[in-house]
Image (cartoon, rainbow, N blue to C red; front, side, top):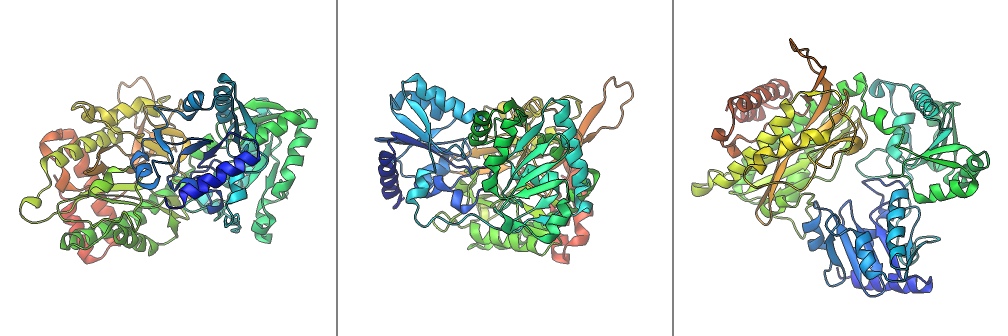
Amino acid sequence: MTQAKDRLSALRAELGRRGLDGFLVPMADEHQGEFIAPHARRLAWLTGFTGSAGIAVVLRDRAALFTDGRYTLQAREEVDGELYELLHITNAPPDEWLKHNLGTGALGYDPWLHTIDGVARYRAACESTGGKLVATDGNPIDAIWHDQPAPPMAPAVPHPLRYAGRSARDKRGMVGAALARDGADAAFLSAPDSIAWLLNIRGGDVTYTPVALSFAVAHADGAIELFIDPHKMSSALSRHLGNGVSVSAPDSMGAALDALGRAKKRVRLDPSSAPSWAADRLTEAGAILLRGADPCALPKALKTAAEIEGTRTAHLRDGAALTRFLAWLSREAPRGGLTEITAADRLESFRKEGEKFRGLSFATISGAGPNGAIVHYHATPRSNRIIEPGQVYLVDSGAQYLDGTTDVTRTVYIAGHGARAKAPAEARDRFTRVLKGHIAVARQRFPEGTNGGQLDPLARAALWQVGLDYDHGTGHGVGSYLGVHEGPQRISRLGSGVALQPGMIVSNEPGYYKAGEYGIRIENLVVVKKAAKISGAERDMLEFETLTLAPIDRALIEPKLLTEAERGWLDHYHAHVRKSVSPLVDAKTRAWLKQATAAL
């Protein structure tokens, strides 16, 4: 916050030199990734906000920061409210805010950092007031960020076939055939995880997601043009890619798009993720743009048998690490002195001992008491709280393994003495209602063609009955040693229009958050599979297989709120966890696990 005022002033001066009245500053890179490299964290550098989603609008005399419900509290903690108006992006969208504040000014934007759809919205907002939207040549923040880090140059490496389950050659042919069926000559790919999946490569350019930052053009004949910094290449990777993939430096991509345009090719772009720069370049060169989803997104979500088996074994090792942590926490936290950061570090140390561990899949959310109510909280030395007896503690964490990606949340009560020995009645009620929603999703059978939006109310029903809810989706897709958040599938009241299909991995994570007091979330990963035939059934049905293996805190459960079927599900789940994890942990942890998974 101490630097934010000077940086905001410097940006306004730079905008003045460029003849601009304002500028859009998203938390985004050229690939619209969730986790971005340090050199692209312009919003964090300017405002101090470190969440993964947000955008600032800076005008000559005012500025605003827009975040979603996950980051409302975090923004208040990190951003100077005297400099930026802090707004909920759903309730007060930035394009609507511009209609009331821009007037006839010129609003700048970096065309590499905004999608085709996003630019269209902002252009309409500017023109509605007599203003205009102007693409900048270079980012104004880069001109004033004098110690900006260099772009990452981690090596790209082949991802073994035994983990991928399908060769890159087969994937290229499949994607090419799909483009041809849709009447497209090529597709522009800007999502590094799509390229990683398509070519069976991985990298280390950003934290938490093992990708190499790059772009690609996929052709209908199965050929691929890969645009990647040559410093990331190796002879082994060149052999792995083979003759069907041509490799060029990123600065040659403009010429390649121009060539597509001159040939009047029909090029598919995802308007929700492709940078508007690419659409502009192709259009100016004469290409015919076809709006459509990233052709890799859906097949990437449909995991192969090898990927599903890999994620099962990854979750087994991960469950053992988390169980060791929970047993350790049950011993150490009641003694006092344990902090959010030391707890998160200890959990990571348990995971590091596991086979095939490659890093965390996101920054661990370790929230004690009121910090647990901040949905995407990240402990810092300034916010770090002691995990005290009598508190509700939430830990949301995950890891990347060569054979799978994990994401799990557990909420536990830190028992104390006397009145604090038992969790408060309200916390038990809220936790049990969240658990009921979790079980409802986990147990549900559903017909083919069902999307996540249709299942989302199941997770909320027990909360709705008493006038409660939560402000995030119930589930997101998860990759296979790739992004911990991936699409197109999800379980959300907003829906996605994409039917859940066998092989898709999604999270099941209802929650409840009482601002200033505590947060509750119970998260397992599940995989969609075909359900066994039922006598008399008229339709084929699907169901979920739960992948995550870790006990759910019985101390926070109010048994009288659970039905017999719900108790049965929990007891069966705990018996499965105990049988699976016990052989992988030490005797002391095994004894704790036996008690933690006892029948309700």
